[in-house]
Image (cartoon, rainbow, N blue to C red; front, side, top):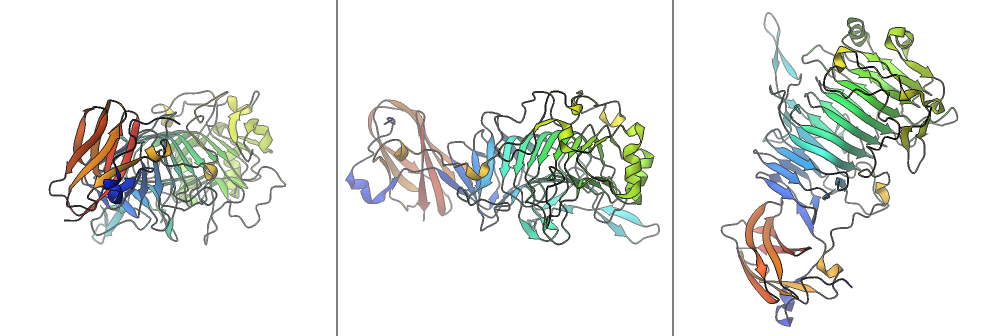
Length: 547
């Protein structure tokens, strides 16, 4: 058995006060109001609504696993005064997932991530004067997370606002319905500015939309929506960012069964009333692959609410280019006279796109639009005509084009909306030939992934214990352990939110029995965590302070 630097810690004199070393699970609840770092040697369990606020930055190390508690509808909310820096890597993605055990996870097990910022949005109040004017006001994000402090509010005047970074991040089993039409999505963005970095994100099994933008100017790339419930990419309230390289995969047995539910690839509104409030939703998407639930004519969708590959309505000016739509009952619906007028004016573009196995377009207007040569839209009868690798493989769907696929060519970036902020490629859809950007960091089977907590010393060394005495205490305690060889040891104390409270020790220790005094000055009563790093081994112990 592998030997640890920490071994056989102290004698029976400490037995009643000792804490067995176990997996490092750090519970998190309430507000995070100072700079905090979550590290991969721990796992973090979110309880209830956790707010990052007051100018604080939450930094999450690559490889860290964060779980959401089901009973409390755990949700991570980055307020517009806070920031999230979650920069994973392809080899060590950051994972947000359900706290339910293997085999028992489901969409909506926890809330998800809500990212709020100070960029423009179009929530306005009408002031009854002559002439009538619109007064900008704060948006209030969906999901029931706003409170007396206004932590659910978003929006402002800073288009370049920076809410932080999410890169190489997975978000699994999120999406809680607080009430009808007031849900928390997998990744919800309200007024997020263009200074924010969003790329290489996978949202899996969301109980509502996988991604929803409410206003803001943030750009994003390399997004995956995997077997969500409602819409894959939903834009509202003046979102004006640019998004490139995204893919969605649907499960024919999972759709939005709420009253009036409709599960779409794209759904876009200017606002709920279809007003002309500015900024008008005018997001630009390019190179998106939408794999719908309808593999072929024999696929039964009875009882499901799958609707359209793209539903653009309520005066939206969203544009979609160089994308492919596979296996939806309806390919495209440009809905209503206001959205259709935006097409005529050139403010809404839907060009250089391909449909496969989408039997119809809704309304004669859209059928005409699809066949207009200038729009360069391909419409083929079967999903197999796309020649994708394995888009309907149940275990490992793959939307990379195979040799000879018609989507390997046909992209066009001459439209003025595409001349900046996009990577020029020759293919339509999210992937080129032999593309691998969705490899290594993604997970297509989160239901059966153990996500075991980081290994504690008890897991690698038999009958090893560490002592902390007394416990509970008044902020003063003695930590005891044995070293089997000389080692660099650090001892730090964190509060329940993960904030560093005290750096107790950080030095070289000699072989033998160690006793380290811990003294916390003027801390509040509650639970704290003592983390010991020795060589490559890390262990966390719980300490209760009760003055």
